[in-house]
Image (cartoon, rainbow, N blue to C red):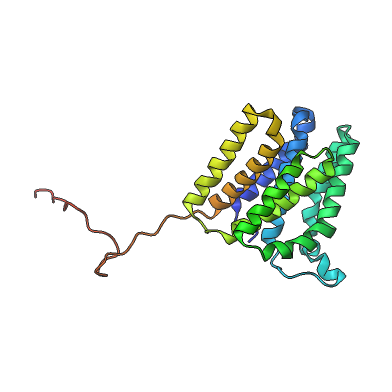
Length: 235
């Protein structure tokens, strides 16, 4: 599954590169970019992790880390950039959120999310989205990570390569962006919802396929007949 969602992987790498440069170019967007990175990181981890049952031993509990330990390097790079930019509190919040999610929240909650239906996952996401407005940065980032994990489970439960689902995800991200511009009071909530919708749109775009052409009713031809026959050129 790692190499299938190319659009999401490219966007993830682009976001990481912009985030590492944002303290010098756009410091005000650093916190929002870190939240979006946590959403995509949780989504990518749930996609790559094949296990759905609960972990028992210590080795199984951190199997998702042993699967790809290099996956933790972007978090260390992000915390280092925050520290260099003079944001030690932000760097500490990133490290605390990563440790809490990787060592406790993901192994504990991911199997439970796997047993929920799409409606149950949607309800869980709606309950976690308001945490993005919390004053504690570590809590905000941890909730963003779990939103990404739940969003991946929601995507895995849904239609694969459906154009209508892609359209709804794009519409949701655009609506969240417009509401965030005209209603600053709910900007944190709209940022969370818009990031999740954009991640779902990239995931759908990565596996989008054309709808197959239906076969002719009599079974003799694989394509529909033309309504008007083509006239041959005069010799």
